[in-house]
Image 1 (tube, rainbow, N blue to C red):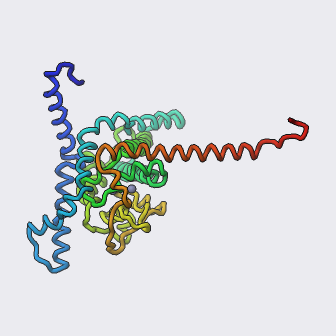
Image 2 (image 1 turned 120 degrees about the vertical axis):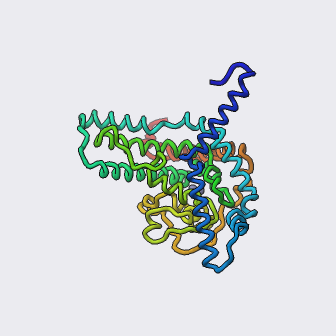
Image 3 (image 1 turned 30 degrees about the horizontal axis):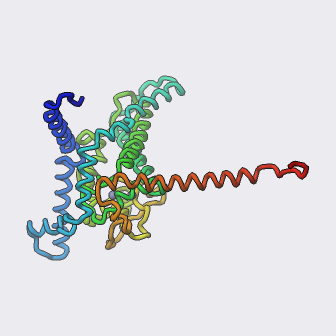
Amino acid sequence: MAPVNAMDFLPWAWMLIQDRLQSVFNLYAPYGPAALGGALLFTVLFYVDARRKRGRRMSIAGFFKSIFPARIVWHPSSRLDVRLWVANTLVFTSAYGVFAIGSLLWRNATLTLMTSVFGPHEPSLWPLWTILTIATLLELLAYEFGYWISHYLFHAIPALWEFHKVHHSAEVLTTLTEMRTHPVEIIFFANAIFLCTGTVFGVLTYLFGPGVHPFTLLNANIVLMLFIVTIGHLRHSHMWIAFTGLAGRLFQSPAHHQIHHSDQPRHFNKNLGFALSVWDWLFGTLYVPEKFERITFGVGTEHVRFDTVLRSFALPFSYSANHLVKWAGGLKARLRKSGSAIAPPARASEG
Ligand SMILES: [Zn+2]
Ligand SMILES: [Zn+2]
């Protein structure tokens, strides 16, 4: 609780900041040492591989120049990424949490519903490894579906695209671009993912009992965490690491997501998944990066509008409201038209 006394304010604020920093940089966090260390390792491997293929000399200075080039690090787009990252991960995270319905709630609701419809169920006595494997795969698919459907809606619905455009207005990609995201999008994605994973866990709990859980690594689903601590951070980078063939149909490589950010119409609305490609494959939004493509990022001149944190957060509301007003106007006109079409014709004797 916030202190009422002004003298207590500074220690309270400092405690709050320390708390936030600890949770952002803890071992399990997306920007913690495991995930960033893994990204660095893959970056080194990428650099060594690229130099070897071209028969060029390797050096530490060359590594930093090639992986953190000044044209990207000091680009205005990257500078905005830093500010939005601070706002989204350090300042407003707790506020976003207020708007998220946790997966536990959905799990309990599903469990209650299934028990009332089908009656109580004795936990199935399947081998533990089978239950863990099923839970791991289903949680992963549910997480990915929540992510895919949210991402699809933010591309397909103009009023939502206005919010997602903040992310796509990035002209260069760095690991911080992940959080170049509008709060409405963060809250929407979190709720959709919690709804999907919570419902799946409700069904699993009904079938296998309350102890059911997936195989984990660093406190999270093992497949998701393996993705995060290896190539997860390279999705937003200039490093072309591509999964092709069947691997490209199952998993999202950094090149998949770079294609997603491309400003070329042939790439629009493709590769909407996070770690998996399977939902993209199923719904026809997959674009496997079979061969290297030189791509540029962004959405035309939209980045000009989103040049500060305040404008990035505030403007999408007004653009989105314009779409809603237009849509409501169109709906009203259609209803009026269909209303007059089904109204009985006026009789000659009337009036
Ligand atoms: Zn997108
Ligand atoms: Zn992205």
